[in-house]
Amino acid sequence: MRPARLAVGVRGVPLERSTGVVLIAHGSRDPRAAAATEALTRAVADAHPEWVVRASYLDHAGPRPLDVLTRLEAAGHRRAVLVPVLLTAAYHGKVDVPAVVTDAHAAGLRLTVDITDVLGPGSATLLDGLIRRLPDADLDAVVLAAAGTRDAAARATVADAATALGARLGLPCTVAYASAAPPTGAEAVQRLQAAGARRIGVAGYFLAPGRLYDGVVASAVSAGAVAVAQPLGDAPELVRLVEERVYAQTSGLLAA
Image (cartoon, rainbow, N blue to C red; front, top):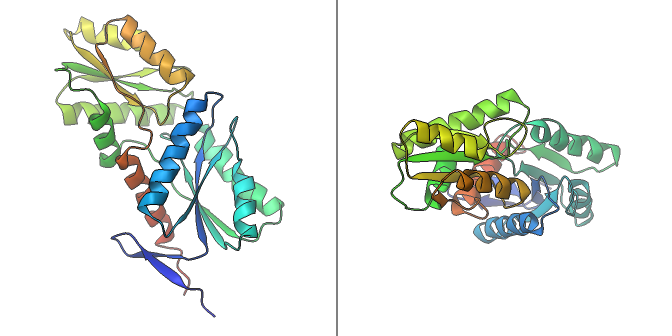
């Protein structure tokens, strides 16, 4: 017998009733990060009560993705869609998340596991969230603060997001990183000041608070930034991005 299905969302993309949606975050020793991921998970579940939505973490916090998949299968779910809660397709998106599928197969799990694209880089929806989080402080330039990565291709997508954000705001916008690559928050602010900017804001290319967010923001403020955006957290734009990723992945996965 063909399994019962539910129509989800305005796009009418059906998911099997047995499908789980698993958000995979990086994880952090800072409890604020897990709290932000749990809040996003609740927001997605509230928007889609027909989905079975769970949070998982690659490191530090729990549960791990394999544990969540094991529980979903034990509860009778036959498919899981993994959504990497990441803003760049760097090491974690390219290596750690695909390894979850390998681990699931090695553990003998029978449910089908599919992976969506990461939530970034700078789609129009993501830019909407960044702009809404940015304080209205009569700014004349913006720093897009990000965690940082050694992956040059991933950094290029952050730079592209900064260019797109500046175009949307009609303001100069440059990138700053908390680690792994220059410039620091202070260096980015100083570059904008050297170009004539005086009221510089910091947009947060972060999903959750933590040591890296705190560090790059403190660096920018020390050099004179006057306004700071909070991480995206459970912003409605992120909920829409999760929806878009799930829809895009499941639209080609329907049984004949």
